Image (cartoon, rainbow, N blue to C red; front, side, top):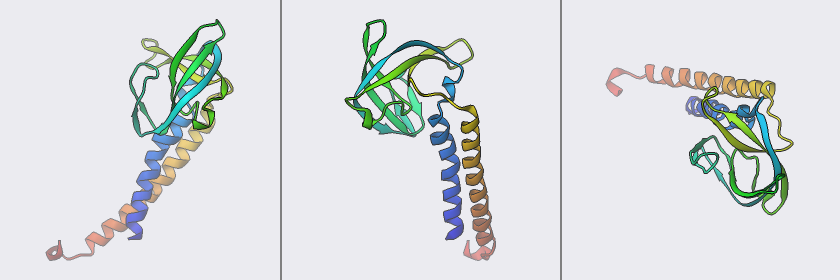
Length: 164
């Protein structure tokens, strides 16, 4: 039983490294250009994942767990837009509050597909922390899964062929 729990926990941790920890750091924004500044007021938010339908930035799926909020954005040029903000940049705690935001041009496929995405103005992606966090989470998950797998496989090898 302990081996099976270890296997399941290991797989869950490994997947969490990819679907929770990696999206949290917003690595796509690292080095991206800020194209606009403004303030956003979230009207409603939902927590979704691991794959969620989103209007941000182009009505596509968002991978990972996190908050997706519908917000009214007042840009510094005077324009106002309704936008969906994903990646937990806004959360349910921000509903009704003004939050300083920037729009970054995220390059999804090396120059051929640049899309605008909204981030908190104080958010700065950190490659080092992201790398260490994802690596640590995935390694612990892999280690636990390997221990669990070896325990489960030993248990099945110990049974007689007639019992299988």
